[in-house]
Amino acid sequence: MNEPTCPAEISEQISVFESGEIGPEARRELEAHLAMSAECRAELELVQALHRARPVAPSDLADRVVGAVQRHASRPQTRWARPWWGLSAAAVAALALGIGVTSNDVGSEVLDAPDFATELEEEDLWLSGDGLVAGAPALDGLSDAALAQLLEELETGDGGSA
Amino acid sequence: MSDGEEGLTRAPDAQLVQRARGGDPTALDTLVRRHTDAAFRVALSFVRDEDRAQDIVQDAFIKAFRALDRFRGDASFKTWLLTITTNEARGALRKVKRWNEAPIEHTEPVADDRPGPDEGAVLADESARARALLERLPEKQRLSVTLRVDEGLSFREIGDVIGSSEGAARVNYFHGIRRLREWME
Image (cartoon, rainbow over all chains, first blue to last red; front, side):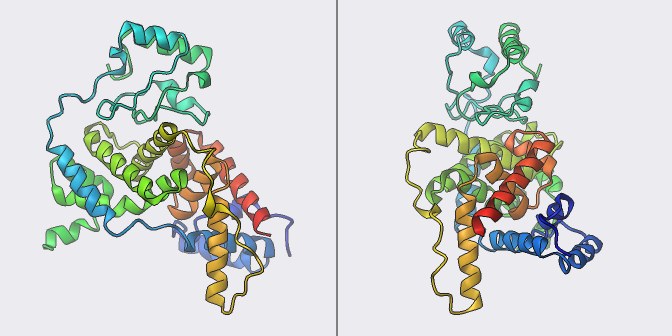
């Protein structure tokens, strides 16, 4: 029996068929279902095709990364972890006006994110839940409440880690 | 490689993170080797340029290890690293500001009428075509499919990486995979 589309619960299992994140019993049940459903078999073929051609890092990249991490670890950390709530009054004013303040100055990006950062759905999310900045803040994506919270935290210095 | 070092290659990430925090270079080395491919795939899905992707991976690892003391273990190390990689890649894209302008040569669909003399060649063609089409998906759909199919992350973990809820990550995956199926037909 074929369905018009592969059911979501089956599709979810198929999606990790190749990466091995499926238990033996679930795998057997899935294989039994696949024997009856051309739609789901087609979806499995797509997942297998994607997985077969997944990119692999150049063989020397891990060595380069290890070397770079060790070099950075041995450097003095005088410029690290400048708190974002330590921005100047001018920067606070710029934020209030919706002017982007870039935070790409490598070496100053280990921060604690305010709660609202993880609630954003915009493509331009600029703070992760782990408190790491990448790129300029996308103020356009923030709600009024989030902007108000940002300003309050900037003013009080209560940026999340205190 | 000593017995201890060999044992580390099978150690769980949480144990390696603990040892890396204590300055164990073998633990650091093992974590990097274990997750370099995943970070590379995520970076490449943004910048589509191997050299640039390698730089992003390097920067992401540096930041991850410098912030290791702040890693609380709420998420897995892999999810945490891929979140950092995603942010790094987004930042890199903003810097160059050429995402929409750049011609994406290798995302053109592979022609269907090329001869495929054996099954292996056909499979390779289908895989290359699927990956090329994957790159055409919107960012969150593309990442959701990549993180699910390539890395086997849960939808909650995917949500953490892409900055969405678990439900949104699931929806992004299903939209992406449906769209790919339509394009592949």
